[in-house]
Length: 423
Image (cartoon, rainbow, N blue to C red; front, side, top):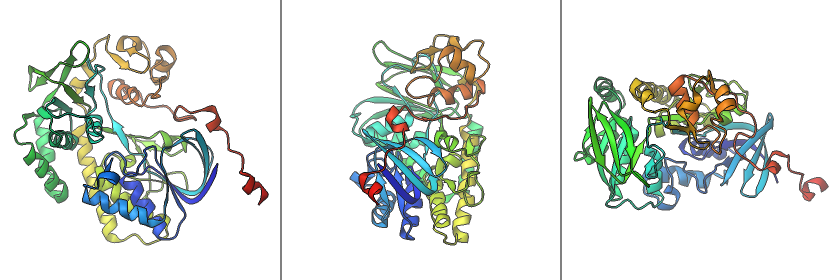
């Protein structure tokens, strides 16, 4: 199957929806690809069905009325030439020819290995939140959350709303850094109000800065967690542990298309165009900034690709969200102690069962792949890649197609349909 469009948007989270809606309303032929079955991304996951979030509902309705086409379950696996993507969609393959592209591929959690982190019942903070939104029953379950930043509060609020007993919130940031971040929020009133509302709902939940997981323990699944809390060790019995340390952008597709990446983010100009002409990036690809950044950058790119003027108000909003993203990055930076939690036997790559001791003597990511099979499994280094970058400073390699595990048939340009050949 073949598709053609003026603009292809990869990712149907808030940033992708905003860019697609504005471009489609201006008359462009817009195609949106997303791996999920419904638009909304991870942050608005399930909102197309539940319609509980007013902001999500407004953008989802606007997207639905814009005329943009949506292809769910679509995974971009290769880009054989400029302006062409090969897409795997269920058992079918699609070749998408486009004029411009907007990359809105979002972010994933940063996992740092510690003893017991592969036990059942140990999940990422955001991963646990997503599962609960999708129906994982947690009523009456005891949950410990460890990580950093506003994601901890948001996940705790979701879990508590679904009946879980949140036992403890462990914030890894030192107290001075954490409260320094909080004192700067007056410059971002929306974030301040949002944080205050979440904190007010969690006033009964014990919380500490300078706190992190030392180990998860149990036989068949997690039964308890050992924590370092302000220099003292504490043990809590629990049913679930959510543990991750911030987010990292999903850069694979940007690298596949040849976009320049620096300091963990896609390099763009003032109109959010990457170094590859006609390819723009929005949202978390520019540095972790949350929903506000995704929407502002999505709106800005929507105006740019539609040839519409960008208002000074939108440009001011873009500068404000960038300031917040830089503030958040300083707050969420993993502390040194987190780099020393794994023992020689602790798995670093859980797809290929690679323990830390297997990486001894490796000088970079390439050698870790060659000699220890790190990152050679199903996730292709999406989990362990960010971990070893934090642990050892090994930066990611260039991406080669396919950027996701794919069928061989999906890497071949589909034949034109009989109707196309006849015409």
